[in-house]
Structures are given as structure tokens and as C-alpha cells.
Length: 143
Image (cartoon, rainbow, N blue to C red; front, side, top):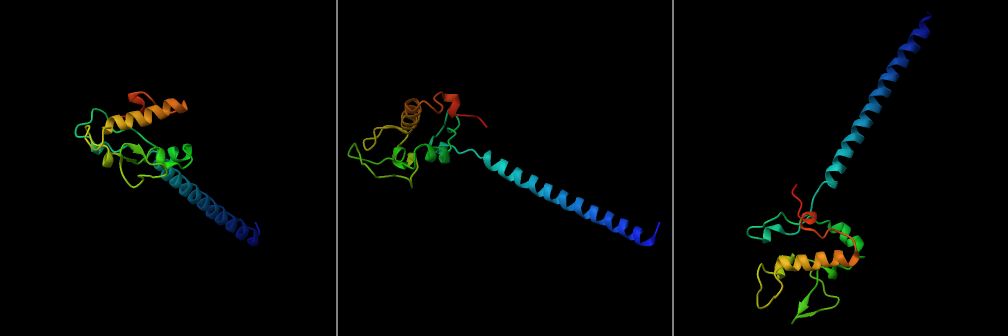
């Protein structure tokens, strides 16, 4: 074999090795990003379960982003404000947890206990819209 051919073949093998290494690195990087995004999708939001002293079930699974999309950014549907027993239109309690206004039991300043507030608002909305979970085990998922 002529000497110039050997050099060319030798260089070709090095190029193949570098190309293969680059492809492997790109694939490993892509796989790593896929794992990161898969873990983000597995993040589970729960409605403030810490508000209950001894909950019978885990906090209800809740996707805030999905609800924002479905409700066309009308946050006051869930984050409502009442004054003297009347709904205040256009007002929103977005910076508060439900438990900030709804106590665990009925109180003179708030007649709707926290558990009833969740169940009435969430379940009734799901029934009205014909979508979303309505049974206990569909919201309160053990994970």
C-alpha cells in the first residue's frame, strides 16, 4: 500500500472516532435533558394539606397551570373575595392560600369550613363543566 493511502486511512479512522464520540455525547446530553423534563412533569402540586391537623387523606392533587388555561386566566373563580357575605366582583385573593380565609371549622366571620370550601368549589365546578375528578380517590392520590 502506498504511504499516502495509509495516512489517509489512518486520518479517516480518527475522524470516525471523533464523529462517533461527538454523536455519543450529543445523545447522552439529550437523554439527560429528557430525564430533567420527565422529572418536572412528575412534580405533583397539592392543595394546602398542611392546613389540616390530622388529614384522613393526602392533599388533593392539583395542577395550577391546567386550571389557569381552562379558566381563561379568570383567577377570581377560585381566588374569590367576599365582603359581608357578598361576592366582590373583580376582586381576587391570589396571594393567599384557601386556609388563610377558610378555617377548619365554621366561624362567625367565615361560615364555610376549609374542607367544605374545597369540596363545594372544586367538585361542583368539575360537575358543571363535565370534566375533572369528582370522587375522593381521584383527587386524593397516594404517591
